[in-house]
Image (cartoon, rainbow, N blue to C red; front, top):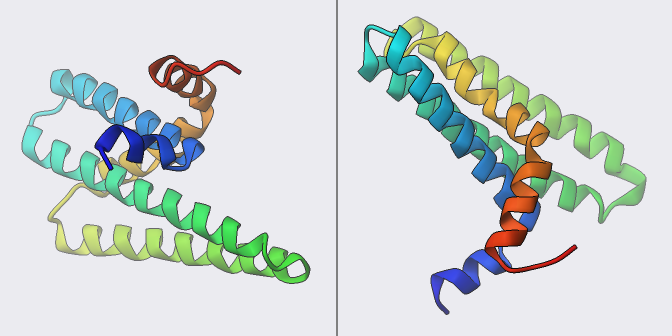
Amino acid sequence: MDLWSRIKEYNRTLLEMHIGSVFYGLVCQMVGAFFVEDQGMYARSLWFGILFATISTIHLYRSLDRALDYEDRAAGMMTRSYFVRYAMVIVILLLVSITGIMNPLVVFLGYMSMKVSALIQPVTHRLCNKLFHENE
């Protein structure tokens, strides 16, 4: 199976969210190039946050998919997965703050790509429709 076929089989909304995160990261990287002194620290922190947001998005998707199979316990399962994700955000930001290996504010800026990509998902959806030659 070639790469193009595998991309088409991938969950479309998740793919569109990932494309939105990368776009957000590129915009933040370009803006940061003009205002940040330590480019290496900024880039490392930003892309780590975006990677963490991507992992959180996958966790959200899998949690939602799993919860839909259990109608009676779905709300509780989603609440637990929500707390797991945000506990991980707290742990990661605390570790980054304590160790000083990355800038916690920039890591959080990267993590916010999850929120921004959800907002621009209609745009990435239209882009993916053109890319895959689909109409909706």
